[in-house]
Image (cartoon, rainbow, N blue to C red; front, top):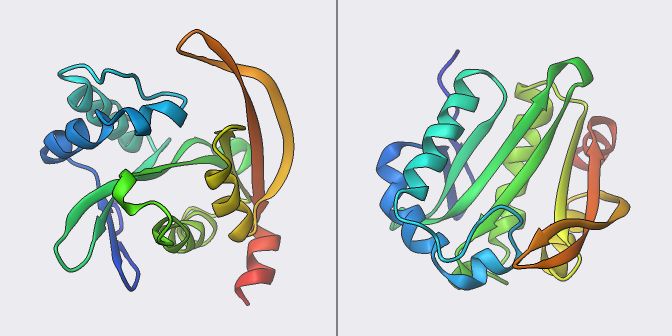
Length: 185
């Protein structure tokens, strides 16, 4: 497996995940507002969960099934969130885009900024044909970010997940390489 890339934007660095990120992930993911609309982040965030998450992500990376990146804000190199292409299916040339940001980063265009190099990475470096993403219907901000970056809503998965005892509807979005290429040109 080759070394994972470092991606850079005007305000952000997207770098490989490592075990040294555990304290930052633990602190930020413990915020209830993060867990509230994230399908797979529990609350309270258990001690040791960050290390478990990182080990799983690194194992998936080694197997070629995921490329997790830490989002850091320049110039202070402050941990600000996570973004990943995961569940990569080479046979179908597709993968899932997953992301979250610390609440103090919301509404400032950081996620759209992070998506641009991730899409380029997915389509050019990984040679994928399709990237897809999910978000809970009650989290329209994620849908706006996806739509702004060329994703098309493909459907609503009714009561797809259960969060805190409530079944939640989830929207499915996707972008194809040809559509991204047309927008990027």
